[in-house]
Amino acid sequence: MNLPKVVTNLIKAQNEFDAVAYSNLFSETAVVFDEGKTHKGRIEIEHWIDHSNKNYQAVMKPLKYTENGTTSILLAECSGTFPGSPITLKFHFDIVDGEIKHLKVTD
Image (cartoon, rainbow, N blue to C red; front, side, top):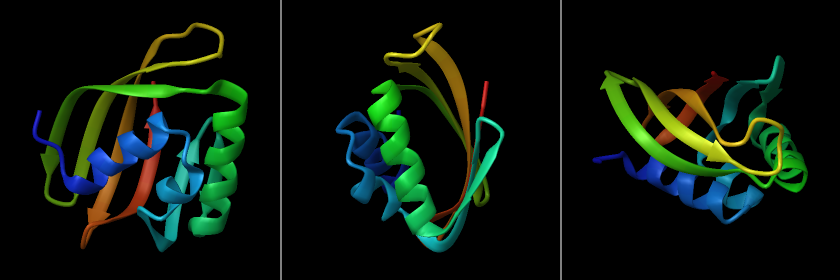
């Protein structure tokens, strides 16, 4: 599967539970929407993913990737210490100049 570098790095950071590396893949003004909550900017994103890592220890296995301009969708199997694991989630990205500007996680 041919993934953009920023998506490959996001999967690596997630699977290594590296919240700092994960958040640094986002622009300063990025927005993440997950589990009904919005997280704005790198600092909030770092806190969100660090909390998620500690609670769920989720790892990602990419299944499919589609791209249309700056918008892309990664379909990934996510497994961890959460009810219903593993599950398949969709990661909707807006990537501009190699940085993630927007991420929405859906099932």
